[in-house]
Image (cartoon, rainbow over all chains, first blue to last red; front, side, top):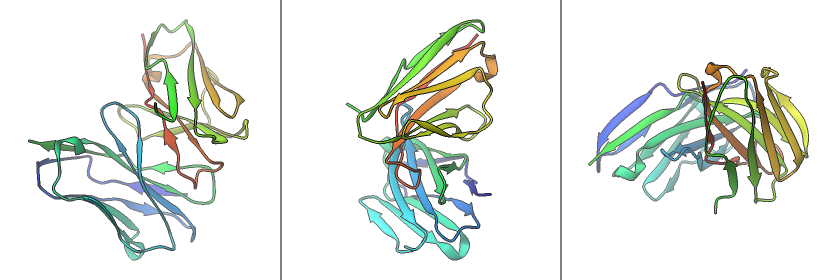
Length: 113
Length: 113
């Protein structure tokens, strides 16, 4: 069985602060994929990143960065200099060789002006 | 225009009604998914279709009936629903299996009275 845990249900920051969203996963497979999605108030889940289990390099995309640590089964997401438009629910998800994406419970991020 | 379109965006129905949710994808994908997102639970996978055949059915009650007439369209037929079925229903599509990126629609917000 696989499981994704996002321990932070809600985070509130002030604009321009950096914020890290935690994601811890469990799987018995050696090959798997990790994802982050953003869900703004409009409802649509927007794909942010996919990382496979053999690639532990950290990734940076603009103000977004991801830290994959296989040793601690974590795939954390950092937003630098947060903006009000970053306010959304963020989901971490895991997939192995099968059809199913297992989602975490989500972290609601509120960025205040 | 988004790659995955869901209609209607909002639906209110009584427990004795029959209604259908529609999903259409314009991405050339051949796998489609229905998810349920309710306030208290993580995203739950309901159905998966790959090449128009159902490959996953996560013990969903029979009052939800999916239909996939071709690789671009997916329906969810609803009948005699319960108030606890009120939720956001999300459709997604991907290129074959779920290790590939799933792209989501904006969802149908369903209220059962």
